[in-house]
Amino acid sequence: METYEMKVIARIRSDFKTKFGIPRQSGLVEELTATVVFEPAYRNADALRGLEGFSYLWLIWGFSEAVREDWSPTVRPPRLGGNVRMGVFATRSPFRPNPIGLSSVKLLGVRATEDCGTVIDVAGADLMDGTPIFDIKPYTPYVDSHPDALGGFAAGRPDTMPVDFPAQLLERIPQEKRAALCGVLAQDPRPRYQEDASRVYGLDFGGYNIKFRVADGRVTVIDVEAE
Image 1: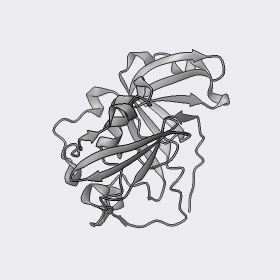
Image 2: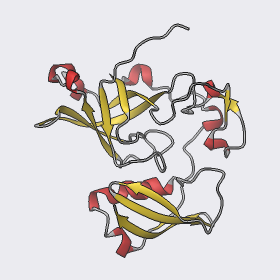
Image 3: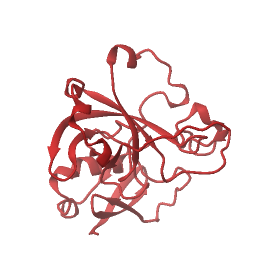
């Protein structure tokens, strides 16, 4: 079987230390911020010349926590409750012949740092901290935007849940991360097959462990612990 080599040019720095809780698509939680940090061999500011003229970027990256030797022609998309099988190429499942992801993120800025060279700050990324990035391309509206496109079984944004976050617990979270965290919880991070209203879930986010339950269509935060 013919293969090609892919170089890791950068890694994402985000508030997600594990896969649990990461939005299932990019852009669902616009308040989420992350930073693209280049590997030493690619820390050349000239490679980003002109990037600031674009509003959005495409990140091409690897599902580093979902690498398998085999693959299945069908998968169970969370959007369909995890109970219906669809063709893998009709989904964005990480379990594919080549575990490659594609995310559209908002460009917040390009800045120079002492330790990591020039980095890119983005919003709306759906990547775990440390995820390898293979390429970055500008989002060009005149060819990348298709307002009349059909969305198949994933048409329209998924529904969100109200979040009950007691003020005394929310105050433990840095103010600049509160909106993003509430947006993540509103997406209902649970696996689609779990419906136990008494179960307590733990979400690692930005150095905090967020304990919550989901019942009657609402997310309720019950504790916040610094890690």
